[in-house]
Image (cartoon, rainbow, N blue to C red; front, side, top):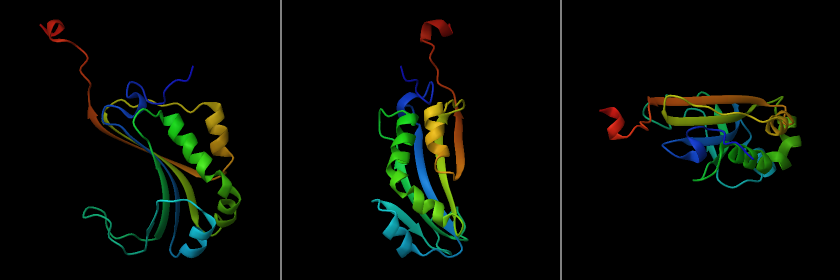
Amino acid sequence: MEKNFLSPLEKGESGTVMVCSLVIRAESINMEDITKNILVDNYKIVMKGEVISKIVPPLENDCYSYETQGESGESFRQILEKHLDTITPFKEYLQKIKSIYDVSIRIYVQSDFAQIYFELPPETVKKLVEFYLTTEISILSWGGVEDNMDDESNQ
């Protein structure tokens, strides 16, 4: 029986966002080469100096990213494994370019709640390690608390 990676925020419910990304950064990136060798849809390219938000300063590097965002009902394990499976065909290319560019796999979890729990089972860790890339883990909690008590117990 598979455990969900987030508990009690299971399967992307209750204001939880789960995203896995392949991120390539450098002062100057040959985007034509990247997009020719990493054949995925919905990638994002942001060039050095571009402003992407009012609160984020202009980027200091070129950046290529490909994201896998969780859908309703998916566990974090499913999202991460789907992402790794999608980029597995490009593993050799990623190894080749990591000496030129900063290449990483980012795991991002955002929750409305204060307590965030997830686990990485050995099979998933093995898949992740096989890429031999830096893994970034970013967790953002808005600090809320879910009230599971009914009105009668509060009296």
